[in-house]
Amino acid sequence: MQKTQIRQWVAQHPLLQQMAALQPLTWFNPRATTLQAGLPHVGLSAEDVADAERRLARFAPYLSAAFPETRAAHGVIESELVAIPAMQQALNARYGLPLPGRLLLKKDSHLPISGSIKARGGIYEVLAHAEKLALAAGLLQVTDDYARLFSAPFPEFFGQYRIAVGSTGNLGMSIGIISARLGFNVSVHMSADAREWKKQTLRDNGVTVVEYAEDYGVAVEQGRRQAAGDPNCFFIDDENSKTLFLGYAVAGGRLKRQFEQQGIQVDAQHPLFVYLPCGVGGGPGGVAFGLKLAFGDHVHCIFAEPTHSPCMLLGVYSGLHDGIAVQDLGIDNHTAADGLAVGRASGFVGRAMERLLSGFYTLDDDEMFALLGILDEQEHIQLEPSALAGMAGPWRVAGHPAWLSERGLNAGDMARATHLVWATGGGMVPAVEMAKYLAAAQAAR
Ligand SMILES: *Cc1c(COP(=O)(O)O)cnc(C)c1O
Image 1 (cartoon, rainbow, N blue to C red):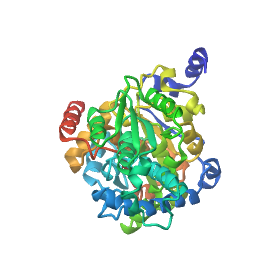
Image 2 (image 1 turned 90 degrees about the vertical axis):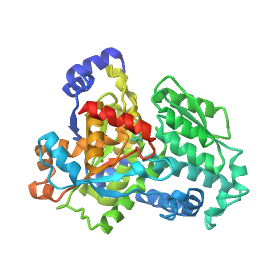
Image 3 (image 1 turned 180 degrees about the horizontal axis):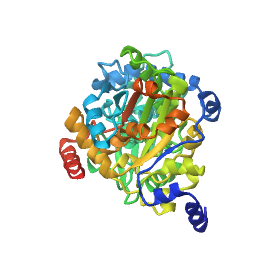
Image 4 (image 1 turned 90 degrees about the horizontal axis):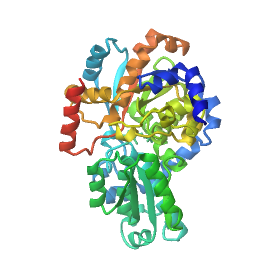
């Protein structure tokens, strides 16, 4: 799109003016439709997700052997679901609006191996690639006990292959750690906003870290270019990967079983709202796809982005998807929420999911830091700034009664509602770094 075209178009859309002025905003998606009407546009099915689930089940014995922290859960990488009533009370006061229903937290922040939501998609894609190579070489059969992969000849076999990825930090952590453990030569191309301790952790795990002074888009492009010249190198494409997306989607069925175990109902009279921090879109998009398959039209998925990086909101609102970047609106893509510092959304995820996402909102960095401090104080749970983006969501929804009544949701339904905030990262943040976040949180309140 041309600069003059963009200027005209911004002038015609007050929402884009607000966005360009970095004002926090909430937008409910008028193109949101039923699962039945939206599903054919995704290009993936429930069977694809079931296939991913079976693949993860095959790898569970390997994960259990290679990562002792997954042993208790028999090699299943899954997170806890907890109620956060004290947080709900504190935010009722902060936002001056009592939230009916219950507030829960999905602690992907504390997923084993890499301490973020990327332990779902990132690890899954590397496992899928390793399986494909080993099957093709005749070294493995799907009926084998995959714990075999932990010993000879597999590390040497995978050592002939390279894996590359571009990342703001957490995707690199997941892909780097699992790839190196399997035996691959792995390079992680890190954007400027990636934290030093993540680079160090990767180097300590035998991963090659390539640093860039530019943002995520540049790190990904450079990674892609280097990989393109090497037939033995597999580039993990965060922006377009269906495999990554399916790894995330497995979360839907798993959450459904957790809800059943905890006696939490989801149906027309008990709506579920899920708030997902969004960067490039693969993580929240894949999880939302899994949630829609699991709960159908009774789940409402809302994406949260920083005011400085509202790439998915911009892509879906405009219908231009990856044809536009926040920088085109003069937005700088600078945020302390490093996992969300993405200027251009995944075109694949935006196009696949735009009919199945209920809404989007933005919040500023100070708000994420304030929420980080309040959660620490009220619930003694520590997250990284990105992971707090979803926390404001329930009060955005509660503050839009007209949208709720259009969806046929009345006060009784909302009193029975579950609001689930997806905590996407923070479990591996070193204590000294967390102390800095908490100090910034004090200043932001
Ligand atoms: C990557 C990440 C997200 C968002 O995932 P995308 O796939 O980039 O949209 C959210 N929170 C944290 C902590 C992340 O690392």
